[in-house]
Length: 360
Image (tube, rainbow, N blue to C red; front, side):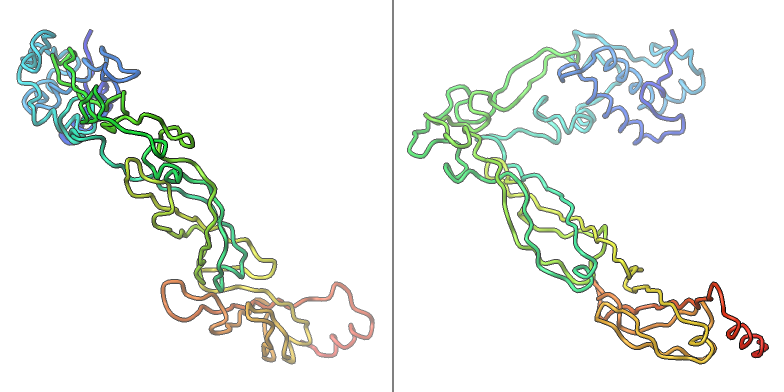
């Protein structure tokens, strides 16, 4: 049965060489038989496709002959007993190291690398939580107390994992390296595979008694309260980064960060538009015709607004520097007051006569 190599790798016929290589790397990671949920047949199929599409000359032949192109014409083929040499014109070691760069713990080469003398320290996870603030708190800024749960270094054992006073000795399984190496036969031939020592969990040492609080993990989940300064002018969707307030790192690694994603509650009178604030005000026909001074709300308190004679409904007045503090600049936005002329639903005879006499 003919095979569509482009379909196997999940790329289009116009895919670049880099896109094909990336697609193969993804498939190789997904289907490698030494991984949980791997699929040897699909791995072989993806490799077969890459041997053709990853080679300019062979790809040209495949494109010319279409679905009936046979892998044997391209000089490829897989010999299970031949190791890396089983690929005719196949992947070289540099290419293989690039493709499996994220699987260093499996193969012992590439981006993962090996770590002698125990497992490497790993940075803790970043955390994110939504923090809701009132409209006025966002306009002028405030300090708020935030409570959240995260992973901290165990205080009882200071993150060491052993009960205080317990003795430690070098792990006999890995001889203190924290890593174990074994030779395993794979579809790519005999390969040296390196992984963390399961006896000491990569520590290279074993405690005579594990910490009674964290169970030897060196970390524990706790609830923490911190005071956070919410800057004036912050808006919905913006975030505050608190460095080092995320989860504690593993093996002595640095802590992650905490990100507070802001949500601002709506206001019953004000509508925010960037650094400006919009508000509506009603005026009577008399005020619109003759002019007047009306009281309008602002975030700083009520102020008097002059309505000129002949003001039309929908007119917008600008109150300078009565808006929101500019978060990444100086000064404030403005308040925009939109006036609406209220038309009475009904008039008495006297008012009707007066309107008629105006002859507007």
